[in-house]
Structure formats: structure tokens, C-alpha cells
Length: 316
Ligand SMILES: NC(=O)c1ccc[n+]([C@@H]2O[C@H](COP(=O)([O-])OP(=O)(O)OC[C@H]3O[C@@H](n4cnc5c(N)ncnc54)[C@H](OP(=O)(O)O)[C@@H]3O)[C@@H](O)[C@H]2O)c1
Image 1 (cartoon, rainbow, N blue to C red):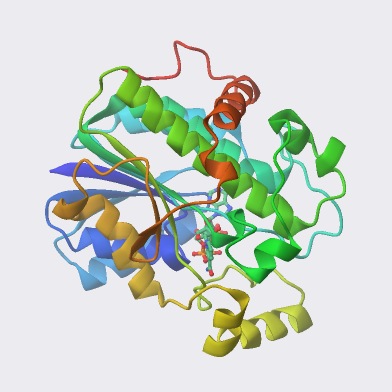
Image 2 (image 1 turned 180 degrees about the vertical axis):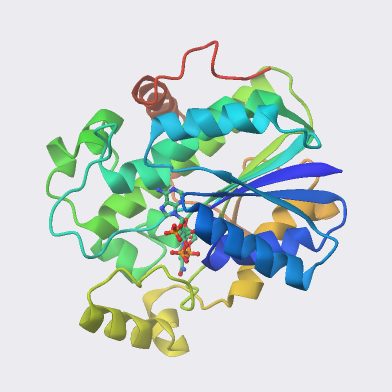
């Protein structure tokens, strides 16, 4: 038996992926969710579909570094099979927010939810993962200004991670979409940097990849938007021609679960690392996300922001 942790596993793509992996009898699935009521409901739902499944829940709020540290400590105390999978799925944008929102850690929400929280969690868990282990960062095609029309309109920007974290400098007046694309780009840079560090330390068999779903219109992703905007978005994002025109592709939650879950369970991905998948297809991520010098800078700055000491950075 092997354990996989899935963040944001109570809804949308994370829930579909948890169901998918729970259907594999050799995996124990840990639903890492901020709401214990929603996590319990998801667990019940999965048990209805897969009565034999090994599923459990553990609280995790990515907008709190303390919660992330508590999660890592509690996971270690659980008597679970060895950790072989980490799916960094939780994410989104609060579209109702009229101005920047900041967490208890004083970090801008979009930055912490879509990047820094997962960076901290991965740093605390990676050394506890047993080879062959697979880490997958859930991204978005919006990380790449050349990939979609929306990416062009709301382009991600590279700059000091500290500025992005505190919503200052070039990040002070950025649109939420551009902020989101930037956070996803930072996460992908750190995925590649982690892959390089694992290889550099001669750690074999552990893999780190990024994955984007395209557009999955049925999730709760845009439910936070004001009602009229939500209606327009739902209409636009369920139209195949419109989504193609924008440069993306539509996907169901089940397809997304097979794409994302497959990266964890499927033998054909053994040893495949440092790659980017869009749905079921491997493609190149944006040129900037592959810039190793910029990635090293983001990694160092994120380590400082998340207060990850060399001792805590659990690289074996
Ligand atoms: N849907 C799409 O078209 C699309 C496109 C590109 C990329 N993505 C990415 O795919 C991933 C999943 O999105 P989705 O569409 O499935 O969205 P969703 O249905 O809104 O699910 C998001 C999940 O993240 C959790 N979450 C939110 N804030 C959290 C926090 N502070 N701590 C822990 N968990 C938190 C949510 O928990 P609650 O239920 O408690 O809010 C929920 O479980 C995200 O990373 C998103 O950026 C989605």
C-alpha cells in the first residue's frame, strides 16, 4: 500500500482525482481539506462508490503556514502506508474581492493559495516520501501568455516573490487573473527547481511534474464570482468554440481526474520528471517558467517567506 495526499480534495478536480485514485486498491488517499465537514462528506461519497477504498481526511488550510506545518506533523504521526504521492491541487481566485486580500501570515491570498502554501507543504514532505514517489503541481494554461488569449490579456509577470507576496511593486495593481497566472508560473518554476535539486542530490525514482486541466467548467472554480459574471463565465466556458477560440480546451471532471490521477498511478509515467502535461498531452510550459536562473531566485525567496529552514526542507 502507498499513501497519496491530495489538497483541495473535497470538490471539483481534486475530489474527482481522489475518487479516481481511491478506485486503485494499492493506494490510501488522504483528503487534505480546509473544511472538515466538506472533507467528511467527500469521504462518505467516495466510500459509497468504492466501499473497499482506504480514504482518510486531515485538515489543511493553505492560507496558514501554521496549518501547513500542523498538517505535515500530523501526517507523520498517522500510521499510514509510506507516502508515495502528493497532488498539489487546491487553488483558485476569490472573484468577489474588491481589493487585495491578505492571510494571517500577511501574504496576498492568490499568491499563498496558488503557490507559497504548496511550496511550503512540498518542502516539509518531500524528504519523507519514499521512492518511487510522484509529486504533481496543478497549474493552469494561464501561466503562459503565449498559450491562450486570456493569458495574453492577463499576462503573468516575473518579479521578486516578496513583492508578489505582499502585493507591492509591479504586483500592486495587477489583475486577479494575472496574479493567478503568476502564482501558477512560480509554482511550475519551483517544480522544475525541485526536480533539478533531487537529481543533483542523486535521488533517483522520485518525480516532479506540472499539469493543467484546460477548462473544466463544472467545478466550483468560478462560483465565487458575482452572479452576473458567474452566468457569463459559465456560458462562455461551456462553449467549445469559444474555449477553442481562447486557445484552451474543455475537459470533464472525470477526464481531468484520469489525466491528473494517471500521473500518480500509471506505470507509464515511472521516472518521468520535470515535464508539463496539458490534459493527457505532454507539452512545453512557457519559456519563462523554464528559466532555471529565475526559478532558483523564486525558490530561495519562497524558502525565506515560508520560513523553511535547511533542516525543515526535508530533502533526504
Ligand atoms: N476548473 C478549471 O477550469 C481550472 C482550470 C485551470 C486550472 N485549474 C486548477 O485546478 C485546481 C482545482 O480547481 P477546481 O476547478 O477543481 O476548483 P474548485 O472546485 O473551486 O476546488 C478548489 C479546491 O481547493 C480548495 N481550497 C480553496 N482554498 C483552500 C485553502 N485555503 N486551503 C485548502 N484548500 C483550499 C477548495 O476547498 P473549499 O471547498 O473549502 O473551498 C476546493 O476543495 C486549482 O488549482 C485550479 O487553479 C482549474
